[in-house]
Length: 223
Image 1 (cartoon, rainbow, N blue to C red):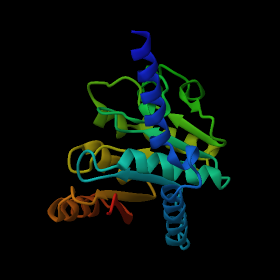
Image 2 (cartoon, one colour):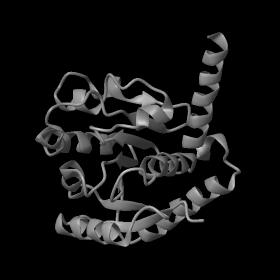
Image 3 (cartoon, rainbow, N blue to C red):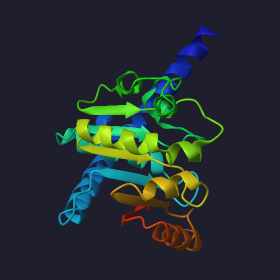
Image 4 (cartoon, helix red, strand yellow):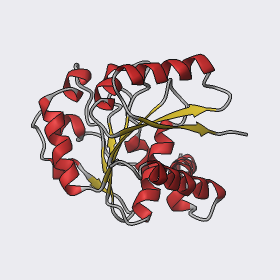
């Protein structure tokens, strides 16, 4: 039993390293690609102020959370004060990436149960904070579209340079459409060999319908 526990701990550490590769392996080729993505986003934002970003995908398992985490790490490494927000309330993943508790988070703040500062986890990565999703409520879409959410975003912008929202797949959740309309830019993650052309085009159409500003598409795991 003890050997199994040690192996499980090693597995958790390995998964964390992969999720946070821009931090754990800053000299790797993958980390350099995230820095290139960071630069491309900055160039694309020259003519407008982009401080709030949504990262979404057409469907599940296309790499949006890993992309969100490592892009945020790259921005923080450059000196920006960055907050990661888990807005994928029904299927939260950020707390797994950072191995933190998800008992308190975004949903608690929105319903007034918890103060914002008590819900934000300060990571070991300088200038990077994480706001987990918190417990899943019966009405996530109503919370995301609430006045409390708009007020929270204003408050966060007073404290952070950049805010990244890890959102549900845009073709499967109303939450993403609501938040996309309120944020500066949207980044759409598609996965090589998994995302079909029809889903990608439909995701683009849906984002256009909700007046979202699609900054670009990120092709993930191209061979």
